[in-house]
Amino acid sequence: MFVSEGWIDVRKLATVTGVSRATLYRHYRDRDRLLGEVVWRHAAADLAKLRKKNRGRGAVGIADTVQGLLQISAARSSMRTFLAEHTDVAMRVLTSKHGVVQERFIDAIAELIVAEIGEPADIDVHTLAYAIVRVGESFYYRDYITGEPADNTAAAIIINRLLR
Image 1: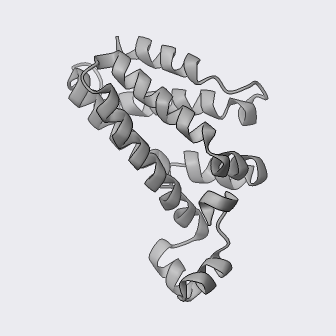
Image 2: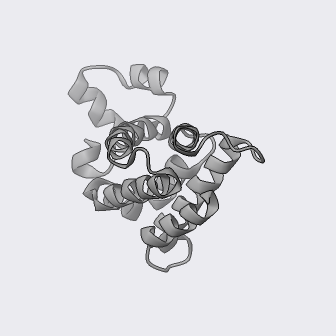
């Protein structure tokens, strides 16, 4: 449903899957959480593919991986629809500390940092990963934040500089 429509209608999902809305809400807590789980499932698969492709390349590999993930996401019509037609919900689902997407993205980037360049001596790895994720978000969602076009290349350049 999300892939084809860029949205999940919980009532329709319950009907299609043959479970009650109450069961869906018991499992996922609310629609935002359900949307976040769906988005993260795609992002995690993309991240795994990109990690294999960019493995062993240090700061450049990390920056390339983040840029690749942003580009894949931007190319998905479901993500474009989600952001364009449900901007407030999308921003909350994708960037809120209360959602699953940002938290898991930070954890994944922290793992990538440790694997590619080692544990930083002067800063907590999750703090560094948080900064990288926020840089990526800032440039990916720039159209919705400032009205300027997204610039995933600039995000990758900045992330590479942060990690050097």
